[in-house]
Image (tube, rainbow, N blue to C red; front, side):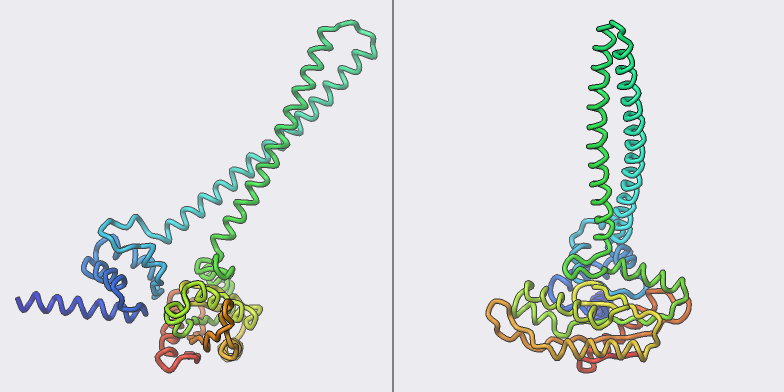
Length: 331
């Protein structure tokens, strides 16, 4: 009995540590999620969470909602699912482009054939040949050629439109729909490209202070406006550097080609600009109160992988929030 009680206590402690480490509120939904995850550490949910948080990335509320906490197995790795979908988009785009090339070639051949056929018909008429049946057949073939040209032109237009939509879909797969900023995937890809090029990199993780209370007091519509305003402020202040929404109320900045002192000066200007602004409710003009963010900033060493740098910056952001908020912590 004592052993069972100790095991239950250990599980309870691990659930608490998990919620604190992931910076999740101890509400029933998060607790149930953590319980299912930790009570079955080798189960499908645990494998999916491990793949999603590999390298120290913390879960967001959206991640938890996506994974769910029912008893059904989680079908695969969410990241792999996204990559597979984007691969299918790319494959489809290649097929559309191949189809368009084929249509263009057939159209050119049809135009040439129609031109030759029309010339032959004119030659027969000018020679005075009296062959009504040949002229009738020629006229019918010319009409069919013109009809085929129209259909091919229509197919070409549709292929163009589809290719444009596919390109938009590929772009949207790397864009946050709320703020219009690059998303988590785009940010990680940019880091990999900059690191491979040997560029000096600093990474900032920024988190809106007391964001849950904004949603609780004013609703998610107002919360979304706050996120958009913060995204705009970061983008305006950090021009020349990549700003992305990483998930939830968390934003990230990839500073390229500057040292950590310069990166901090830029980020601090953004922090001051955000905290100095007095936000108001659009509907009533009532004051929303001060909006601030906390941030962690870390410089990447040569060859350092994304997850390591992100985890370090995220922990620094967590320290900034514990240290009073509306501040920046650096290495």
